[in-house]
Amino acid sequence: MWQGKAEIEEQNEENFEYNPAEIDFMLLTHAHIDHSGRIPKLYKDGFKNKIYAHKATCDLCALMLPDSGHIQEMESGWKNKKRKRKGQAEIPPLYTAEEAARCLQIFEPVQYDEIIEITKDIHVRFNDAGHMLGSSIIEIWTKEDGKETKTVFTGDLGNNDIPLLDSPTMIETADYLVMESTYGSRLHLRNDEKAELFLNIVSETLDNGGTVVIPSFAVRKNTRDLI
Ligand SMILES: [Zn+2]
Image (tube, rainbow, N blue to C red; front, side, top):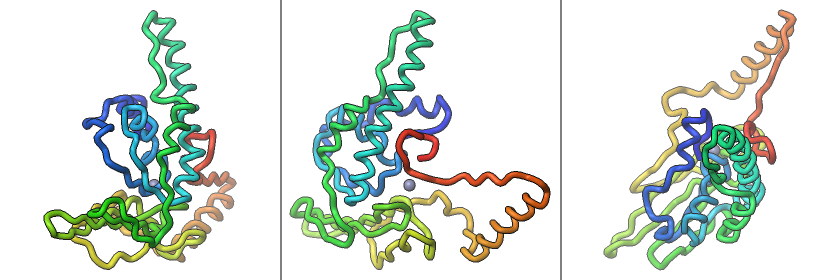
């Protein structure tokens, strides 16, 4: 799901460039709404097969997707009020809370570290990605014409040595690697350096009579801006 300015979010309404009914199965790395938010639309447009995801991802999606539907309904309500005033036709929401609740039945919860047989020729394993609760690096083994190929799909990756979350699992081998690269162009600070930098900013701001505002990433119901 696209999030941001209106022009960017308009892309959520676009049709998929393939027939959703032809998808055999989905592997979902984690619950963040930019990764999961258009699953209800995919379901509505014909995808009715299984979505494999870690148990925690399934539990989170069960809260977040209907809530996202609720937000779509509210937003479309506002937009349609404006459209009505201009004499334009109403546009239905991307999906409703009820439609989002319907797609939950195709979620198939899995655990970390277990090899799962999807078909005789496709096996997968979910590994802890350390990015959020339930986040997974997925190893996929596919057999074609007697030859086995291993593809690793990292999804969003976490950091090493941070509180609350485990470090991302080390994957030893891959024939192909599909990787998140959001922060690929810069070096992260070491964690102990981060803490010192943070304390310096707080004390400097307070010394100057300022106010410290700490934004925090969170997954929660009813506040889209915090997802
Ligand atoms: Zn994420």
